[in-house]
Image (tube, rainbow, N blue to C red; front, side, top):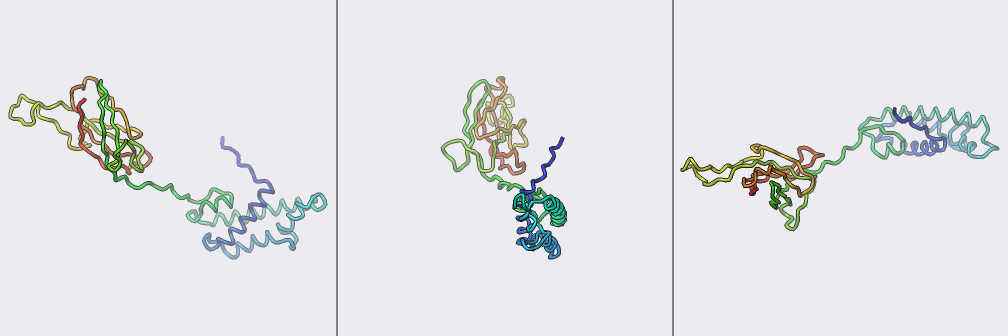
Length: 243
């Protein structure tokens, strides 16, 4: 069940209506508020010398038991309703694209389109891998940028690394003169790989089948951002390592 919105107290409304009137006057051109609309608010808000207006009644309302009579309380409650209705009509006329966070805060509303979060620039950095064979088909890979020579670290805008890989047989000869020998298998693109995985962070462990020990891992790497798909870096490779 949705939580019921709590109506502002009379004191909170007083603070809000004063800020709202000042905001509407100072930002009238940007917000598209008309002179007629401002005049309606000004007439209701009034001043200390104009009987029946908000400023006049508020002075009585906050003046203690002597001035805060039942009639004053009734009058200020009625006037609050009129101000809320007049302000709502103005807010509804303001285009959604015009609202900013200051407007929302001052008017106490959530209207209007919000500025979308800044998307990080497309990742251009390439990956330099450092590989360590742990054994049993497990390989540890640390990734760094071409400008960071000391340790593994993520490129700006990346949340982790994506790897595309295939496990191939080691060649015994690099030509096919002897057809009984195995021709060296080469994966020439990430799309041609058999598997792909994403790992958070700049260092990860790739667990291969223990039966692949003695074969060769051929792989490609790219910086990746799971929150901004399409913003990933270029595929780098091919790289290779003994399993």
